[in-house]
View (cartoon, rainbow, N blue to C red):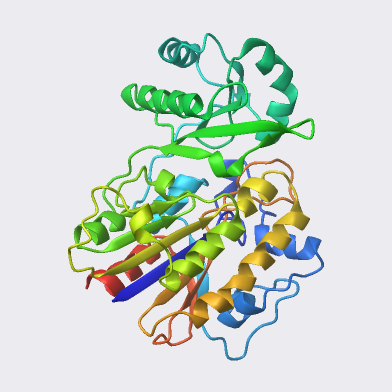
Length: 393
């Protein structure tokens, strides 16, 4: 049975796109390069062996004379710099129209309808903000009023934060579903509604990553649907299930950290993951399986470090990911293909806390693949073409 494993290091871009200034980004953006510089080099021996250091000059990474993988740079075709746009393009969806953003906050008519439909009686914030900063600023008022903290960013997101010791987690999720329905019914073209639960830990509002949920627009048909409809298993690890609004997925499991996502990916490769436990109800395991598409998102680089301008933490997160790559490669079967890439940038060394419009690396390994320099690749949908050729042809 053939398998393909795609690991997305969320936001690990490698240089500003030519049109970055249209997205209010600096040409100096280069998430990986600048994180390497900030940390006086990173120790990434496994990605180095695959050829990452051959793509650009990254401090701490040597160029390999005999890399074991295929390596290159992918340029985004879609108009965006966010999680949804990047992941959708990997599956063959080119988003020519950018999702809507709200630099002045959400319109009154949208907020009024949200308050009416949820019965929450009011909202706090309604402005672009850093999630960690806004919950610290408004936590006291949130506790006085019990109003949810609603905010956005430079991306197309409708984010709802509550202290789940005050407002139950199930209520937060229900409010997010209502927001998603309103946005879809009224054609607001918003990419994601994000549940941002937090608790007071050691006297400080602290977001609970494992309980975060994303409610995305339902994507057009893509390679995930094709694999599923052809009898394959699409195993979503991390927030992949949310990014694709469950469409085209057969199995899914959320994660609370990159380490958990890496362990689960390794278990999936070793065939030790309890698939019965995480299978969707509509999955028919009696059919002959044509193969597996294991799709993992590793979000900590973006959520915990990129958006918080923590270049040191970002570097450590990449090194942690690298430490698992050799274990994953050791457990690959002859016909397996491993792809490591990113979905956009989030350079923690430049001004601002938002995503950055960047090109991304692609590293490909397979026992039956010849190591080559792939050069510049137009479009993240290159990955969808590999999936189709490997699993569906």
